[in-house]
Length: 331
Ligand code: UT7
Image 1 (cartoon, helix red, strand yellow):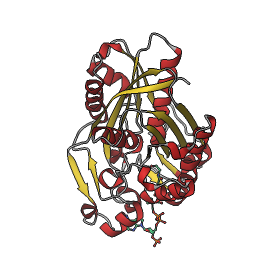
Image 2 (cartoon, helix red, strand yellow):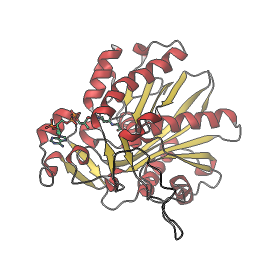
Image 3 (tube, helix red, strand yellow):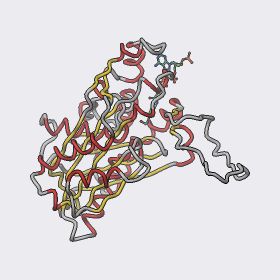
C-alpha cells in the first residue's frame, strides 16, 4: 500500500480569546446553552491577522518540525473558506512569503472536510510525480469575518486559526481514504460571494439559486439539517475508508474528527461502537474552525505526545458543500 509519512506539524492561533460569557453581552445566549448544546467554551478570533498570515505561521512551524529545506517542497495545498483575496490564492501568497520557490500551489474550498481532502490530494501528487518530494498542506480560517454577530444561532459557534502538515510518500504503509459530497445540501450551510454586477447588466439573466434569502456574505447554517447530515457522514466516511482496506476501526489508536459539536462526535462514537477515549477533542478550547479544526487538533496531539510515530490514526471531516471524508493512516 502506498502511504504517507507526516514529517512535521504546526499551528497558529490568533491573539484574541473569546469565552462564552462574552457573547451574553451581544446576543441572547448563555454559557450553559453553548456548553451543553455544542461542548464549546472558548475560541480564538482574529485580532487583525489575515488568513494568509495565520497559514504562513503554521507552515513555518511545520517546516521547522519536519526539518526539511523549504526549496524541497513540491506542492502546497491550502484549504480555506475564508480567504483574503478572490485572487491570488492563499497557497500562492504563502509560497511567496515562505520562499518555497519550487512548489506549485493549489487552493481548495472543501469547507470542514478541507484538510482531509488536502492530505489525500497531496498524497496523490507525491505518489504520481517522482519530482515532488515533500508536500505542504495548510488549513487557515478566518471564519469570524464572515460571522454575523447579531445571529446567536451561528455567532457562538466559530473561531479562527490555522495548522499545517509537511508530508512525504511512504511505501508499504497503511493508508486508505474515502471522500464524498452531497451538493443537494449546499443550501444548508453557505456564505454568499458578491452577486453578478457589471456596467451593462439589465438583470434579465437573473437566476434563483434556491438558497434561503440572504443578502450578506455572512455564514448561514440550518443547524438541524447539518446536524442530521453530520451524524451520518462521520461514521460513513470512516467505515467506508476502513472497508476499502479491510481494516478494523477498533485498531485505530486515535481518531480526530472535525470539531463542530461534541454531541455529533459522541453520537458517532456510539454508533461506531468505538470508545470516546480514542477521539481527540479540543472543541472546548477552539470552537469550530472549519478546515483548520482537524489539523489544529492533530498538531496539539503530536506536540503533547498523544499521537506518536507508528500510531494508526483516523481523520474525519464533514461540512459545507456538503462534503465529507476520512483518511486512515499510520503516523
Ligand atoms: O462545521 C460544519 C458542520 N456544522 C455542524 O456540524 C453543525 C451542526 N449543527 C449543530 O451542531 C447544532 O444544530 C447547533 C449547535 C448549530 C444548534 O443546536 P441545536 O440543538 O440543533 O439547536 P436548535 O437549532 O434546534 O435550536 C434550539 C433552540 C432554539 O430555540 P427554540 O426555537 O427551541 O425556542 C434556538 O432559537 O435554541 C435556540 N438557540 C439558542 N439559544 C441560546 C439557538 N442558538 C442559541 C444560542 N443561545 N446561541
